[in-house]
Length: 618
Ligand code: GLN
Image (cartoon, rainbow, N blue to C red):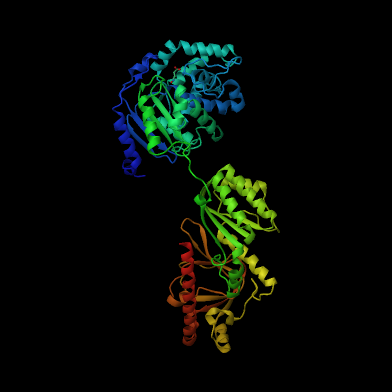
């Protein structure tokens, strides 16, 4: 994308502004209990944001590197979950906020289990759970994992590492205590060394934003597409970040800012707004609790100015996902119908209802859609739920919709979900449930039709077939040999009809064959006697888009009769089709005029119908 799009984006300008305003805040002090950290320039300030579609915004010292420190705890916690699974990790480290400082020795009385993985004790225990794989030392695995989050190879600041290792007696003591309680099963010296190294990984504010974006994006790096963390563990990591991520300021943080976050004494903060973005702020001056003063302020302002608090209530009801609802008494499928068929649909079409959904289906919106559909069930026998514009379904909405499908099947009614090729999990669930009848010889199942148009056509056919058995004369699929039934020939005498027939040529096209292609020279028209043809175009992306399906008694290729140019669409035989092909040049002047008049009045009423349709669409 054009770089200027970001440069001039309102988000970039907003970040530029808070960066400038925060430069004036000079309270707090650079951490000095790890001697090397005092070398940081207290005036550094970098802010970065990465959205779940991979847009990167950054300002100030966003590329200045510093050591990640405690922010690493969230990432190794995720890795430990992947290595050992939930139960084993929980048996070694709890998930309760301690309300105490990060270096407190908060161990559960009796078991010695650290309160949570975001304080040092819990983080050291977590690091102790990281497995070395054959040929890979645990540290290498930790670096590789961090690299998946940032999208670049990671390295350690050796000086900071040595500085902490030389002075980190308290952490060493914690590791020994954990070992004494059986929480660590590896040598405490080895584990605490790994922990010191992990805290000394060099990152930038941009890296932190990218890491946050991976968590916001359900574990997938939005820029590289690499899985940084298995999605099932993302919510676990975000949970401990929200309850324990900011040490003994965690309660105040979630109350005020409302985003899961993790801070480090290097001056970094990584914050996550699930589903939206990751934020990285770096400024080395810390408050008394060890959190970056300007980092907290930047997050507070952003959250307040844009109402980004996680618990800010966004409504999710049918109104947000129901694009439109219509029945088929006025708007039919693209299959062209005879007047008799149209009459059946005008009278009975209200029994087919089409629900067009859009956006993201979540529990709230799916539940609401379900209730709306069920409340109208007494008046409809055929339901088509068009999911073409649905971009995602969560587990709850999948369950609600499949429940709806089986409920409708037990009522003896028909429900089809269409255009859901991309909703993989939804399809998989429905196929697994095998909701409603399915399989050869039976009625089509809920996923049978690719698009709403074909599903609606099937439903219409049912209504028409039903009307036939109750006495209407115009049978679907029956052969119509009589040219007098063709609208183009209305008003012709018997002799004229015979003349036309004699000047045409009877042709049979096998099922699947192409009768003509878009672009071909147009020299004739075709009256259908039997079978069925499909008029279609290539929608550009290689998608076969049906314009209409025509049957006996109908004509195609007649438009060129007026302008005699080229074919504008493709026509293929859907089933074996018998036609009378009539070359334009073989039609005598008097008949030509009659046919053109018929065509003009046909188009006039078509325009009238289309106007009505556009009115409904609008
Ligand atoms: N390495 C640091 C320590 O253990 C990390 C602490 C922090 O960032 N809060 O003391």
